[in-house]
Amino acid sequence: MGTAGACPPPPEGRPAGAPAEHDAWTPAERDAMARALDAARLGPRGANPLVGAAVLIDDEIVAVGHHRGAGTPHAEVDAIAAARRAGADLTRAQLLVTLEPCSHTGRTPPCTRAILEAGIPRVIHAIDDPNPQAATGAHALRSAGVEVCSGLLAAEATALNARWLECARSRRPFVTAKTAMTLDGRIAAADSTSQWITGPAARAQGHALRARVDAILVGSGTLAADNPRLTARLDGEPAAQHSAAHQEATQQPSAQHPTAQQPTPHQPLRCVMGLRPVPATAALRADDNWLHLPTRDPRQALATLADRGVGHVLIEGGATVLTSFLVADLVDELLVHLGPLLLGAGRSAVGDLGVSTLADAHRFHPDGAPALLGEDLVMRYIAAPANPIPADHR
Ligand SMILES: NC(=O)C1=CN([C@@H]2O[C@H](COP(=O)(O)OP(=O)(O)OC[C@H]3O[C@@H](n4cnc5c(N)ncnc54)[C@H](OP(=O)(O)O)[C@@H]3O)[C@@H](O)[C@H]2O)C=CC1
Ligand SMILES: Nc1c(N[C@@H]2O[C@H](COP(=O)(O)O)[C@@H](O)[C@H]2O)[nH]c(=O)[nH]c1=O
Image (cartoon, helix red, strand yellow):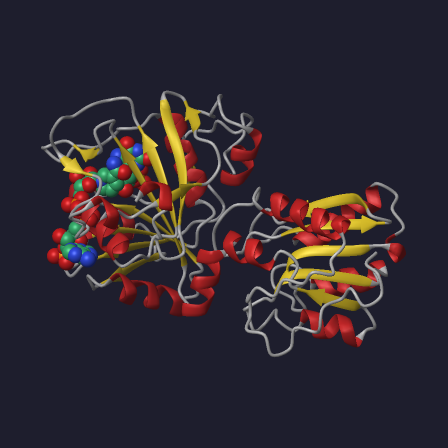
């Protein structure tokens, strides 16, 4: 546990998420927060932030936990459970967590309750929670007699969730864009055929993603060309060659569920964006869980989705719609599924971004290792906060 006086001043008055590093943290506290950040990275991107936690007793990390996505235990609860399994005496522990513990009941009970029930006397969180519903956690813990400090590795914690924090600030859904392209960057042949560029294993991962987002969006061009169903289905073969971390992050269907064409329990809201009316015969009208967004403005589309309670939307294309979200810097996460074929002509995955010189390129950072699913390469990228260009690429 940190020495008396090592706790930085209470964070009141500091804007949510603002870094406030302090030089009085012990090396063990720093190590534990670094482990919590590493654990956080294992979680899936989306409507929820990436959060990790570590339990420290006598300068020893006795347990680490992280959040695995909506509806699953929060990082604090995960770490506390792991500490209990290890037989740790939590009344002597400090809990280090990358985001302020929540004090509200969402899909899971408040983390403050779990901390108080465990009898943990000291909590260090890296950054404050910008969600007004959850942001009273530090106050609630202090009121109950827990010592609460914040600001340790705050810059790293802010960077980890930069795009999520931006979504929270601007009250818009987190945007994942997925595109299945050929080796020469085409998403459809000259005659508009595109099914299928990627194989069953990569498509199965696409369906697993559909099954965890709140909404899926395509443009009216894709609707006209493909008449897609846009449902989440466990079709395709289970993937054989990808890491456990990748499997967890994407909630890849396991080898035990190779069922063909079976709808998953959660279905996303199926959305089509564009001014054209949605034909009465469109497959996505199969039930009421669909929405026409009669706009070409991506911000307008996201505002409408936010009003409908959508926290995570998947943009599946086509190129025109994807380009409009990229131009507006509204793609937080980009998934590229690369099929081993060449077309030489046809629809490019991305249209004109208004970039005329390399220095203005939209840059993304790899988010985990690429995975080979069947014969397709699946790559995950995260957008930089404001697409800064690394110095060595200038
Ligand atoms: N391989 C893959 O991963 C995918 C491939 N595809 C393929 O892509 C092709 C379709 O791509 P694309 O033609 O680009 O179609 P889009 O699906 O991007 O739809 C474009 C249409 O959407 C409307 N629209 C919505 N927002 C905007 C905007 N910001 N600016 C301009 N128009 C907008 C316009 O129609 P309106 O007049 O209604 O406003 C426009 O014509 C098909 O061949 C399909 O098979 C599609 C998805 C994924
Ligand atoms: N062509 C292509 C994809 N295309 C996407 O899948 C949609 C069809 O969805 P559904 O009708 O529900 O099966 C299509 O309109 C487009 O959004 N996806 C991929 O993973 N790989 C591919 O090669």
